[in-house]
Length: 139
Image (tube, helix red, strand yellow):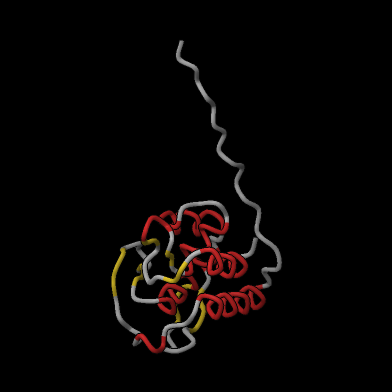
């Protein structure tokens, strides 16, 4: 699943939030919703993004409202609300956009799809093999 598809699907199964996860995952930001869309908890959004869609952290784009060059994941976070990470993974709060400028998650998904097309990402990149779970019986 492409990141844009996951954000869009996540917007259909969670209520909007400016945080990764609220109310036990009922509400999620664009990235938290993307995590939920692939079967992961919203509060694990960054781990999921960096494992499945590492390009979103590595690739940069011009912020559509502010004109700054940032990583795609930072722009998504900023368009969604007030939380973001700096390039050293430090969780910071900032208010660069007034509440009236924040984008809906479907609109964010549309912007991410544009970035995927610009970068030539037309299908999901290969995922690492899933972790095997072994159940051990105590007798």
